Length: 245
Length: 289
Image (cartoon, rainbow over all chains, first blue to last red; front, top):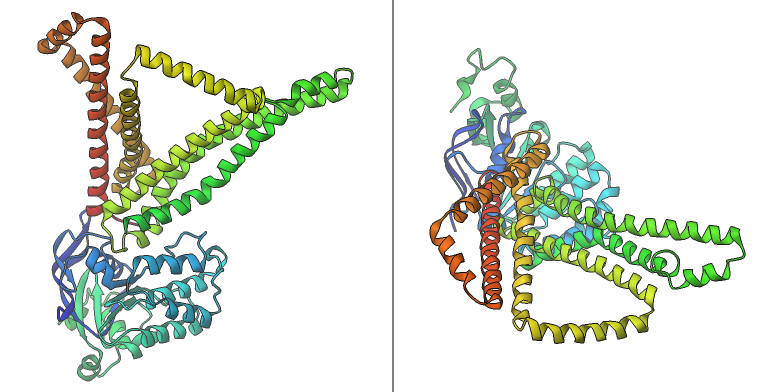
């Protein structure tokens, strides 16, 4: 087993001539909860899509569990996109069957239990669910896999604070010791307590990657405060980038 | 994995096309009682001859049910095509693509599953259309007459065929082969156009339509040019001159075989081009919104 779950070198993704990610060098170990933090348009979603093979890098290399994205990496990644990705005619039963069919690491009992807690019935149709319920149902499925890497793109973006707590608890109680959770967000206060590491992305570049403990120790401030400093409007024109490692 | 992909594809296509099939069959059955191919309409007209109100009503009903039948037949053809296109576009190139392209499978498996299931469903649509026509014919002439006539016609046909065209089983096999290859090639041409449209950042649907027209035009031009070129190519002319000197039956046979082989090769070439073109684009240039 490769010691790092994610390794990228010089990872670059261009859309036309515009760089969404520029020369990312990064390694992420196993058994970590990592926050991918940055304002809108900083490249968070692009990075996650590259990891799960929905985009191909323009240059540089990217490995998950020691392999370039392909069927193997997809079988060890559990990915929560920032949208509903099931056909809306499907019932909860259907999507559970679907996951059980395609993912060997899917734990049906766990999914059923989580649906029960959420009050989602097996015959419920996706179409009739509220936006928040859809997100919770999808997260319950994603977290019912024994994956090595969970990629959660804005998992708490569209839900109320109570649901937010449920989601964070679900993440915390369901990921196993050796798996890594990488979650992107700009709502840092809510997730700061669960993070081991933080990656700050700005304009497609990693401006800081450190453990949360280090940040607190060295800077004497919370990740949220640091985030506000790094990404304060206009700060980068005034040399706000001094925080870059 | 491939069979699982096909399973889910079947379920979602049957879900949408199944009701259309049922409607076609139902309307055909209704038409055997009133309207097209009706057993009873003649009798009804006879019985209601004296009553102008009723016979007028019946003839309106007959007209309406015949009209509805043509309506559902057109709907069958159009919906089959639209739903096949929509299954590819929504299932791979829209939000559902986030699910499908993160499954632990290769992109070619996704594309192959879509194409083969869509092909089977197109055949199913044709069979349903055929079945509805059979129902109408049975309704018109009666079940017993129909099958006894069919059996008589069949054995007569077989006798004629084996007398005049002893090679007919070969032709049937060749025809089926060609139908499968060219059917798949036309399906994958649609997919390829959608993949090309996907390369464009915006107006992807419009660009897909343009890509389809462009690909068809280019293929026609290539085909036209190679025809002109080949017909002026002296070895080919000499070959046809030699063919002409053979007796008619042998000449015809050889000619048909040649045309078949050529069409099969052209169809296969198109299928390979469209399949791998789609596969390359969706492997390397996928960019879901």
